[in-house]
Amino acid sequence: MTAEAASATEAKLDGLQPLRKNRDFTLLWTGQAVSQLGAGVTLLAFPLLVLSLTGSAAQAGALGTLQAVIRVTFQLPAGALADRWNRKRVVQICGAGRAALFTALAIAILLDQVSLAAIFAVAGTAALLDVLSGAAETSIVSQLVPRSQLAAAFARNEARSYGASLAGPPLGGFLYALGRPVPFLLDALSSLISLLTVSFIRKPEHPKRAESDTTSLRHDMLEGLRHVAARPFLRAVILMAAPVNFALTGALFSGVLILADAGYSSRTLGLAQGGIAIGGLLGALCAVRLQRLLPFQRRLITALALLLTLLVASTALNGSLAMVAPLAAGLFLAPAVNSTLFGRIAATTPVHIQGRVISVVALSATAAAALAPITVGTAVEHLGGIAAMATVVAAGALSLAAAALNRGTLRESQTVRADTSP
Image (cartoon, rainbow, N blue to C red; front, top):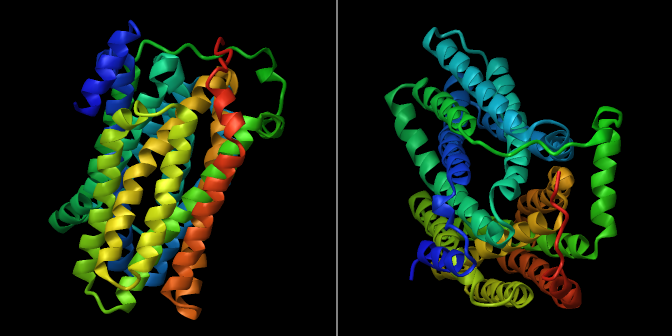
């Protein structure tokens, strides 16, 4: 039975239509899938463009760092703004903004008038729009999808993200070879398509908040932090999500560095990374079926225990190409864990504060993941590959320990129903 068939069967048993027949969710998902593909295309095209202008790998790397810093810095404000503003309109405006930015950049490239400052400005602004659009889009899902289907909806979003990350960069390299403006024009077109599809969504109504006109942005961000701090389940999620994201990101980065030190060619390293990413995509496609095998709390603990086992296995295979196989299997489990957690957060958080709450959780996870490359890179350079992998194994163990110690909290969350009324 496929994941889609499993989802359809479960929906039928619940008296609900399957997700593929949910018109508004399908429109949102399709538009964002196209937009993420466009973003994946320019993910490679941006550094290639910088290299062609400056010949500096450091400048190309600085562009990626700028985008990462913006995404982390504006995560909390984006969540607060998504709760204050009309979320559908936010996604539309961000799509229009991206389309305008990349069209202007493509024209500047055609006219040979593009500068390094302009490239950094476009890339930075696009990253800011992505953060804001992502916070709004994630919060919209619970207004389009019944509570019992939220985990399945987030699993489909995971598949969308993995698919775009796999297909986007190779397509970006191909299009860049056809002409430097081409990948940026495709990104502009994909953003325009996203804008149009979201425009046809009939829902959601924006959650009304009487205090939204009088409270400051700082107040709203602090309210989101206080809401998370006061909920045992949300605190448990952060205690699990931060170390497991560190472990996954660190393991993937360690694997590349260790295999490079072992003398494997760049082509082999690329194939290895592709194989690991395919593991994540397959896991996202199977996530709905995996979610049905065990109850929520047992599913999380089982998945985290398996992930820890796979990290240990990869460590034991240190320096061998075979260490890639456990990493791919570990990434296979990641989408089921992520969609389970975010589905439960959406189901148990009042709709008017979802943007802030999800942003707090996402910030903790992405900040931990951002620290992983420099941590394991330093470990590989000074202590060796086994020490680097031991670091990620320790992070995986912390995540599993957090899940085990919060077993009662996770079990109780299964019976909690949030007030999702506007």
